Image (cartoon, rainbow, N blue to C red; front, side):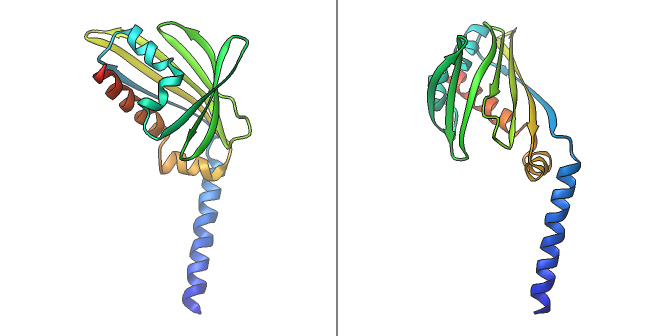
Length: 167
């Protein structure tokens, strides 16, 4: 009985610590990563903006459903193993700058991704900047200390580099 009580007490303290630390962390963050890619800016732009083609090169992305545009800007819904998220383009300046945002305000996280493509000898450099918000303190703790704010960007850039390497 004493062991069970100790285990419950330790778990309660751990959960309390995660909640307390998460609550103290800022909800907003900025994360940025760059990658040199073996393709010119136009080719990078073509892949990054080919919404319907995302499932063919982004691991874990099951489906993309195009939604009606809003003021001429594309919207789509992505489904992966974590669930469903709706996105929209908020700015596009081909072939150098694209800004997308999570259009689901009810999620425990949100924000924008800014893609900046610049020419580079032998190809291009793509810089992705996430200006994110994590509303839930537990998710804030996990994204800061467990997965890291750049994990999704890193996976995206790795998949994009593989896709362009085959192009």
